[in-house]
Length: 251
Length: 251
View 1 (cartoon, each protein chain N blue to C red):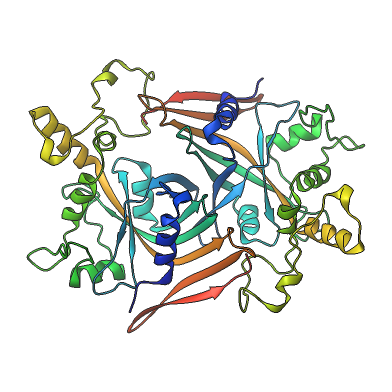
View 2: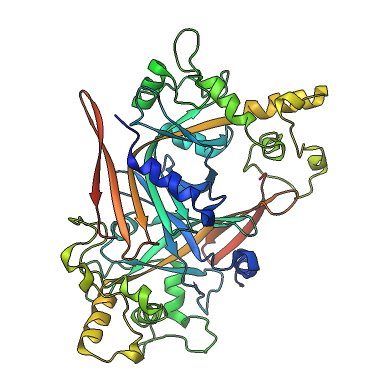
């Protein structure tokens, strides 16, 4: 059992100099009225279960107060479109979304039966530092991963989770009186000095949701190749496990 | 009645040198199982009804054989995500999709009650060349527009509609024996010389669907501004017409 070939294809595409910084994709979800929504999200890395590298996850993030969280919790099937302009590669990734909220959040407790989540509970994740991120009880430590993902962001990015109001709520003006008090940076954990810094860090973290995507289908179009190529990767689940099939398609 | 401000915002963003060539957006649609799909499409221009500039359209294209055509015909509500990396502007555009197929196509005849379509029938479109594109009978000439949109593409792009098989259908290998016979260029109309050229042009045109989007809601986030700005434009329809409301939102 190995990591499917599309993971390497994405990593190879990301390594092309012309694709430098192309770590965003558009995520489409469906609301309770079956209306599609799509927005740009930042890719925060791969998460590969040690015991099941064939079900790799993509890690992204959201403000827990954003409408997409409720959409992804109620209709977990989403599609990502990752267009890498530099090499003209498009990856369309159908996936099951899994939202990791802060531990005490109202939306917490929506458990997941995703194969990747079960596999993480059994053996933790593949990491260069050889930590598996398993709790003492043996289960995968999602909260530790959520904090680590938050901590990996730069201070100005961390501050975007520190906005006192829900994203998308109404504002009287662009320069609302309190706005200059909204933090523009939230320091890394090791650099927290003042009480205000610590308060901001905790508040931002309390709004930080980690979003993980478990792909079930990847449609890769290579418009940089001549002639163009298109390859479809489909996961088939069966009693004893699962496998990825590859099919060449007309571009 | 004027063109809503978000049209100018998009045009201004496109005019920023760093956004040069950012004429693609990701379009999310929903299939009959309520599963979201999203793919990159090329923006082929605005289409402004002369009598109703307040209902501007965005013009895109598709192969008429692609699954998204059926999706957009059966569930016409879509969302576009236009991320302009150079200026860090994101436009999320909720819209009604309207697919213009070739006149003799099986999917033809799905009429549209969109306000923009009615307005085009009444007064044609706003154009620099002052043609309104009205048929003799008075109705808007969608077929002329479709041909014009096809003709505006460069020869290699035109050839992508000339593939003998439906996009997404299975292929035995990347270098299937007949593949070298697939045209890599289809000349402009004025440059058609051989019978084969003419045959290719007609075949490509017979697969070319114009997709028009009538926006009803535009969510504009300006991440290049400090502090960030977010503005929501919502169209309200009432008995005598319609109007766009602007609301400032928390980014």
